[in-house]
Length: 315
Image (cartoon, rainbow, N blue to C red; front, side, top):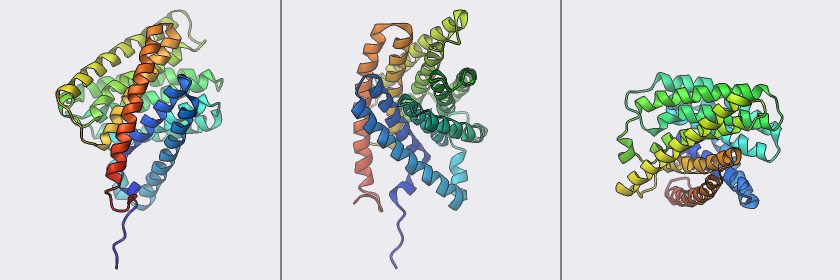
């Protein structure tokens, strides 16, 4: 009897959620820069990937509990929260506030359990995925702030502010555990350290755009967005120099965790430019967006090539 071969998506690790994050954030960037048709193509791709991974998540939970449990306490599991919130943010930009709110609720429900499980299994020296504790939390902040700006309730702004503060605290916790040798040796997820700063800047920027915050509070949020974006750009510069010094050209699924920070840095630059009036940040954001898009194409090509060699894949 011929051995049954699992479908290719059943072999994907939790880190595959970064593909949804990367695709959705580039879709947001394309929307912000007026490339709506291409943005919607990206949205469709991100939504299909999200549905595929969500179905696989549930099937493992119901049918392969040991594997689900072994993966749920690892940092890449938090891509489930981050991917859900970034996708929800893009849906909100379309005016689909109901589905976006549903994704925020879903992300908020699964976030505490995954976060606690991940933190309980933290080690002293961690790769870049450790920063996903910040990214997932700030994803909730960004989506909550986005929905609030869309008129879905002032209470969401307060929830976003709390999530922003908690996310920054979790970033500091991850930073002290990060193995800085990963800047030289990492397979792609070392970039999440920069992406976490970018999504934090985006959250602060969206909060500063709210009319609820005035005076000192508005100034503090605006300044925070600028400082976080500056740190993000500095981190990306260091990571880029490391990539040039120690090239890692081979495909690795963790390269999606490189594309996402690039796209998030672009979107954060565009958002901070809009809220602060600093024109050159918009120019920078546009340039970074196309760099992120090119990286997305390259990683997608690597993924497709690898998939073609997997039993049960496309060939």
